[in-house]
Image 1 (spheres, rainbow, N blue to C red):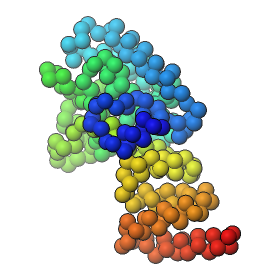
Image 2 (image 1 turned 30 degrees about the vertical axis):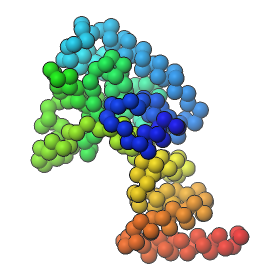
Image 3 (image 1 turned 90 degrees about the vertical axis):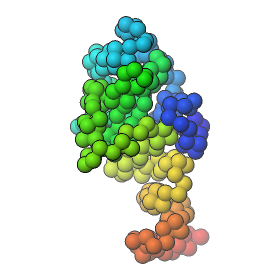
Image 4 (image 1 turned 45 degrees about the horizontal axis):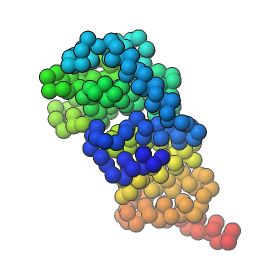
Length: 270
C-alpha cells in the first residue's frame, strides 16, 4: 500500500501527480488481500479508449459529458447500489468495475480516472451527503452526479443533494486525492463496523490515522476494534491515546473503567 500511504501522509493537490486509481485499488486490498491492480488499471484504460472512440473531438466538453453518460451509465450499465449501500464491495474499485455497481464516490473515481486518461478536466466534489463531479475546461462547465446515472446537475441541485439550507460555494470546492481516499476509507470502515468485521475495520482505521493522526475518535474506535479481536495491548494503547487527546471526553469514566479491566486481564496472563 505504498502509493496509498504516500497520498494519505502527504496530501497532494487535487488531480496532481499522484495516481488515484492505483491508490484506490490498494485500498481495496483490505477486502481482497491478493488483489493485483494491473488488470483493473488496464480495464480503465480500455474503457477510456472505447469512450474516446465515441467522441467527435476532444475540444468539445459538452460532447464528452454526454458521451460519457451514454457509454458508462447507459451502454455499460454502471449504476448506484441503493439497496446494499453499505456492502464493503461498493468501496472497492475492482468490484465496481466487475459488478458495474457502486456508491457515489467509487462511481466518481471510476469516471475521474477514465476522464484523466482522455485528458478531460473532471474534478471530485465532496458534498456532505453525496460525492459528485465537476467538468470544467474553461469553456464548458457542469456538475455531474454519477450515482444518479451520470446526469448533469445545477449548483442548486448540488446544494439540495448536500442538504444545505443556504447556497455555500465552499461546498463545491474540488477535493484532493487525499480527501477522496479518506472518505472512501471512512465509508469502508463504517461498512465493516456495521458487519461486525472488526479486523478489517481496524485495518481501515490504521490508514485513516495515517491521514489524520490527531483524530481522537478514531483511536477510540480502533481500540474498541482491537478489544473485540482480543488484542488487549493494542486496545490499551489506543484507548490511552484517546484520553490523552481528549482529556475531558464525555465518556472518560467509561473508557477508564475499560482500561482498568484490560489492566486486570493483562496482569492475570503475565
